[in-house]
Image 1 (tube, rainbow, N blue to C red):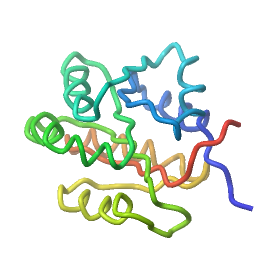
Image 2: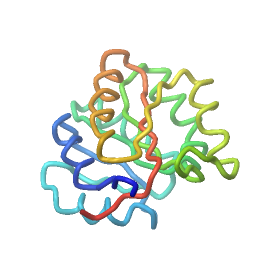
Image 3: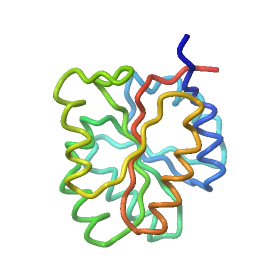
Image 4: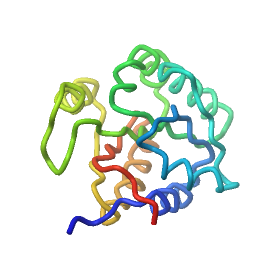
Length: 165
């Protein structure tokens, strides 16, 4: 039986990192994550209407001394490329990207959203880590440490839908 990836464990790890804001585009796959996030008083949810807004909002929060992450699907990451380039990459700001890995299931890729994600991250020089179960949760802290040490975005790829527990 596959091990779960639970929203609460992810949030606990984000709290350990001192994350203050989650800039995100709500979607149906993140329902359990939303259910867990909405009750965490130490983390402010910042919903966006379009993924391209997320990096710019995260940049503003970072400049204001906050510790945001961006939580979007891989297809949304493709949409926000110029915003990411113009705000995070050009200014050299740290940013943890948590990207839903649409089309990825247990090492198998289906569809172009999954097929192109890692090559595009590699082309942009964005290191990435794969989360598939609660056993991988420590990769969030590792990625967050790396983004702060390098002032360059680092991505955590969410390779499984969240579970409630």
